[in-house]
Image (tube, rainbow, N blue to C red; front, side, top):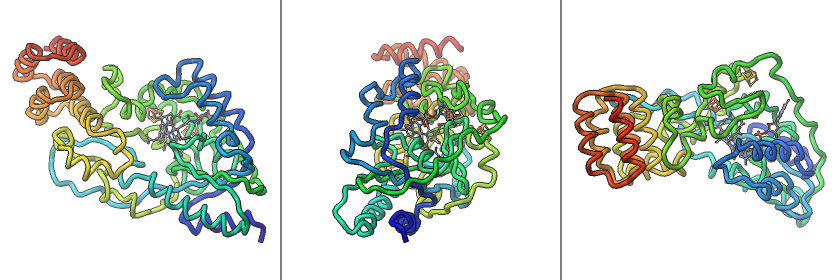
Length: 375
Ligand code: B12
Ligand code: SF4
Ligand code: SF4
């Protein structure tokens, strides 16, 4: 059996759902796309610059002597019932990839197993380097060229059997391996469902997502969220699945069913928002830190909960939002003021006036002033 077949069997044995192999040649198309996006300001706030883009798309700069890349996909879809409904208060919405445990350590553990097997299979000293998401590679571009899947107009990577509900990783090596044929492009045909479904018009043209408008990015961004985007967030607490939910290619997606991704192990699909806004550090560590959403920290999750409460408009949230006007974080105070303005009511108006009189932070003060205009 050729070494590539052994490596692919080892990948499935390590628990991956799809695998493919490509060369370590530069990713010129991804470089061009990223450069174009950077020049057009579409990557503002992403940390990309021409140097990073160059590294990201030239694998040999990360691993000198690199010859091949093994690309893998892991399905995070689970069929479990929603987490038990313990309360009757308003609820948020969490994207599928963050309802259970964080996929990063799960992916890295499987990549480590596979790296060890590759060394054994090679039977000689070789260099291997693994990466997923936070590594210096364009994971989707790697997966496309390795034949793992193709990109839809929403830029998501679609696998044949598991739809787009997969996360990606790769192992780069100096072993020369026979590459797979790249996935064929343009499989969306005339469909534009994801573009129509996107609440912000972030898919500015087919195969291009404007990072600044994408609600997945908006839920993750630091600081004060621009008010027009707050309105569009709806009940989203972390991530956005709207364009993938709208996609017919996902209708028959298989379900990996990994127990680590089951909702009962994380914050689930629809956490109650008032407890989320009031969450202590200890509660955050227990409930959110172990999930993919954990990296954004407690303040951003609570900020998003305040925005969601404002968008839902349930007056049951007023006491919690009033208390949040005295929160130590100006971000929580500012977004709670915004949410109170959306819900309305005399009590909220009086509390905002009092809050403005004692507000030391200029950004939060501006939020409260703007909120008062709604009364
Ligand atoms: C930055 C980033 C984001 C940003 C920007 C995403 C974007 N679409 O631009 C934000 C925060 C918005 C984001 C959101 C999400 N992300 Co993200 N993200 C990344 C990250 C870190 C880098 C992506 C990147 O800039 N790639 C480089 C550029 C060049 O690639 P590209 O934008 O896909 O460009 C390609 C296309 O434009 C294509 N193209 C251009 N023209 C044409 C024309 C035709 C005809 C064709 C066919 C193709 C084509 O060619 C380019 C090169 O391949 C990767 C991890 C990584 N290290 O790669 C994860 C990653 C892409 N994200 C991932 C996930 C899971 C998500 C979310 C689903 C999470 C969620 N539920 O909220 C959403 C999906 C939103 C969406 N519609 O893309 C997964 C992808 C899983 C998948 N099946 O696709 C990744 C790979 C992480 C991982 N390792 O699993 N993400
Ligand atoms: S993830 Fe949401 S906001 Fe981003 S492109 Fe898809 S539908 Fe639009
Ligand atoms: S919704 Fe339609 S256009 Fe968008 S990715 Fe799916 S098939 Fe392609």
